Structures are given as C-alpha cells and as structure tokens.
Image 1 (cartoon, rainbow over the protein chains, first blue to last red):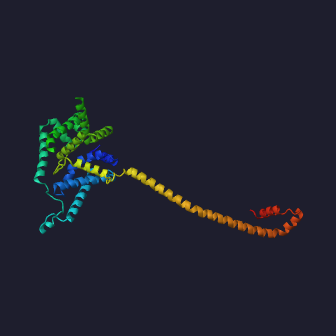
Image 2: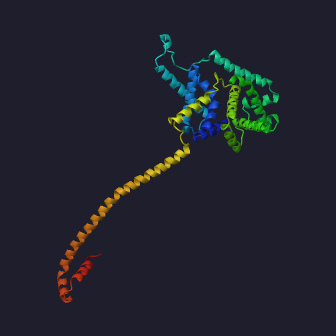
Length: 190
Length: 175
C-alpha cells in the first residue's frame, strides 16, 4: 500500500461520513497547503483563512473525488482556486487605506514570489535546524534507516535487504527515529 | 508498564501505516486507532511534518491548529444544517440513478397504459355497437330473403314461429 493508497482509504472513509478520517487528511497536508497558498496570499491570517476554506471546500466536494489522481493533486487544485478567488474578491473590495496609483497595478495580482516575513522564516528554519540536530544525535543505525525511508523513498523490504536486517527491525527503527525527532521539535510546536 | 508498551505498539503501527507498510487487517486497525485517539492524531501530524522537512517540502509556516479550526467550522455548519453532507460514493450514486431511471420508465409506462385503456374500451363498445347494428341489418335482409319460407314454414309449424325464426335467422347469418 502506497502513500496515495492511504489517502484514498481516508478519502473513502470521509465519503462514508467519517469526519475523523478527513481530520487525518487535514493534519497530513495542512503545512504543504499553507506553503502553496503563501504563493498567492501575503498576510499570515488570510493565509490561514484561505487554507481553512480550501479544506472546507474539499470536504464538501469529497464525493467527487474518485481516486483517479493523487489526493494531494486534487487538494492542491482546490487550494489554488480558493486562493485565486480570494484574490479576486479582495481586488473588488475598496482598499482600507489610500494606495498610490503606481502601486495599484500590483494590488492583489499574481502569485507572490517572496512572501516570507522574517518571523515565519525563523520558525521554519528553526524546525529544520531542530530536525537536523535530532538526526545528528541519534544512533547511526536509526539515522540510516529513517533517511533511507524518507529521503530515498525505499520500502521496508528494500531497506531490510540493503542493510541485512529483518523487516520488523526496520519498522521499529523508523518509528524510534521519528520519536526522537518528534521529542526534539515538540517545544517549538507548542 | 504494560500500558506503555501497548501505547508504543499502537504508535509503531500508525508509523508503519503512514509508510503504507501494513497488511489490510492492520490498516483497518491503524485507522480505527488513529481516528479514536488524539495522541495518535498528534503523532500522525508531527510525523508528517518531519517527513515534509526531510523531503524538502519547503513550508513557510506551520499551522498546528488548522485541523482544529477546520473541524470546529464543520461542526458549526453541521449544527446549523448549512453544510452539505459529503455526496454518496460514486457506486451508490450510480445504483440509485439506475433505479430512479427504471422507476421513472415504469411510471411513464403505467401512465400511458392507463390513458390508453378508456379509449380502447370506448373503441370496443363502438365496435360492438356497430356489429350489433350490422347484425340487425343483416337479420332484416335475411328476414326479407327468408320471409316467404318462414311464412310457409310457420304455416306448417302450427303457429309456433318466433323462437324457430330467431334460431334460423341467426343460424343463417352467423359465421
């Protein structure tokens, strides 16, 4: 069973009315979706609103998802459309303060290339740094196994064959590595 | 101690599930466990965050409470009945669609049948009436042809004429 199949399983459960299954999809993709939306929306609060609206739209339309494409591709399209609609709606609204005519052409148009505020970059960089530290601290065998899985995308069977250990050991090592990283980043997540 | 081990086993199951490394019966168990435990839901969320970072999905901001916000909004909308319940799976929609089609065809057929019946009945009545008129006309013609014979016959039959005449008349005119 691949990652896409896990998503399809969760989507099917949502179609049957299981809200908790949809909640798992939200938890899985919320950060990636925010990243997509941040290409279109400047303000942090607005970004969260658009992300929330995208997930609500996805929930309402989940019956139309047939699993022909990856769930994330489908969700991505919804998020981009929601962000574009949000921009259009904002463009129609009179601005709260006067804007200079030279800035008016840029008002609410086109994806924002560099929308990171220093605060947001710090948060993101901090998490990446903590994960790096956790990897550096963990035993070699755990680090190798988790990187083979997450970076190389190898299956448990492939990892087991590559480093000559039972599949059950691969499973437990990957879990332990994740636990160690989780402990490291927990304080940042609040 | 046993409880801790049990929790760790469940957590490991969920970890393998997010890697798509479970058999079907284990998947169902993992799904059931995760949807029913806030602790496992948090683990699921954070392990995916770790994956995103390791796979270089650059995110500019994390949203630890977004799932809660989405869930709350869905709850509110469900309470005020504004939310559309997710549509039925395609299979059931198709089945219901087919049955609806069959039912509507049957209704139309019954309707047409009920509209046709009185007309046909009327037609039958008219036909029967026409046949009776034709028969009467035929009877009269036959009677005229047979009159001399019948008169003669009546003479021979000793006055008992009517039933015999009728029988002969019908017998001659019938198929």
